Image 1 (cartoon, rainbow, N blue to C red):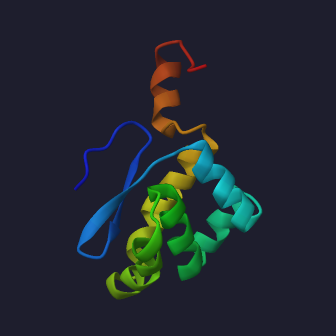
Image 2: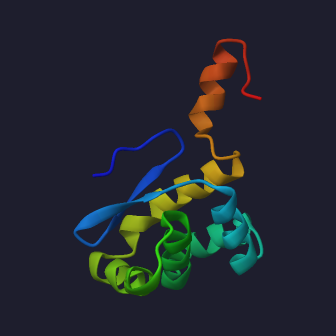
Length: 114
């Protein structure tokens, strides 16, 4: 399991996991492919394997053979295993790359991240 920093999400992929990293490149790539984050989220929840594979590929920065293998790995492990990590990841992207609980913690202390 990869060591995660704030905002990163581990997603199972085959016998291992990949780290989904929030970045401007990821959010713009996902927005370009799906027409926004909300349409991407709807396709994730609809169990669209192409959407799952595309988001993982963009979020993990996979290229070449590794990128082409993602859909097959998702299929073999079961698509249900990537729904929650991808949903969490898309929510983090919508929040500027920060976990949602970071805002809750900051507001409890009287400070909001800026």
